[in-house]
Length: 362
Image 1 (spheres, rainbow, N blue to C red):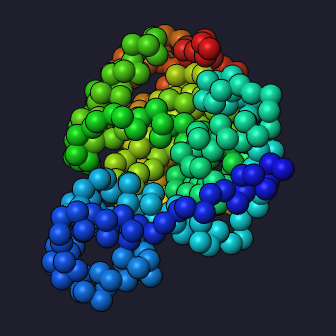
Image 2 (cartoon, rainbow, N blue to C red):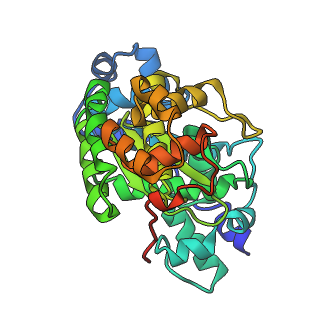
């Protein structure tokens, strides 16, 4: 019953061209004038209206500028229509039942992402509403490969459930969708790094997280902290959203200051180094790719600038040495401990008391 009710869904999904034509009629806009305004030939404009030409990002931007609504609206219309007329091939989940089995429903309910329900059908409807779709076909069109849109740091200890990660990414979109940020600027983002380094000394996330969000917003970057549900082992992700807004998302999964700040600087490094190469994918075996290593190296330099590395490597397992060095380079001692452990200069059970630990409050 669940498959028959939700997998097929309503048949009313129409091509973006229907919306375009409706607006043209309201404005008494001829095909020739519409084509001129949108920057297409009349033949291409007609193909757009009848659905034989797809709406890509560039065209969505022109539609938004010419007809109104947002670029994201036009891309969503395109995804919904294509999913309805031709569901994706080679999908990982082929039915709504399979999707529900893979989604971390219990955590999604306890985290407040969806309303609790005992009915399988109501759970499915709540999940589709959470993803912003009304049919399973639309979910496939928008989210089947959504995790590929992010370069996410992933634990090598556990196998990551891609569907759980998709839910985690979606919650990040929901939490930031109403936020307004400045125009994207890599130069401004670079300028914020020193301010972010100073925030590493703040003890409470309630104090430093709003400041992090504000600094990133000045550079045109949206930022979300989203607790990872069961099956999602991502610690951080960076994406460029359909409206070209960069989006950094962290899970705070390790609840330690060195892990949090390194993940944040890693994602910032991706934006500075690899903005034009997204989506960035990790190797299927979980190994580090060249660009992941580049982001790691850049993040490490944000924490300990290169001119201090030799001095870093001369440190011993001394609380006083580490604290004095941390003050000298301008970051909290826990980050220095993390760097020393990463470089093999401290065992992972040494100097742990210098790291700050956090807890989730439900």
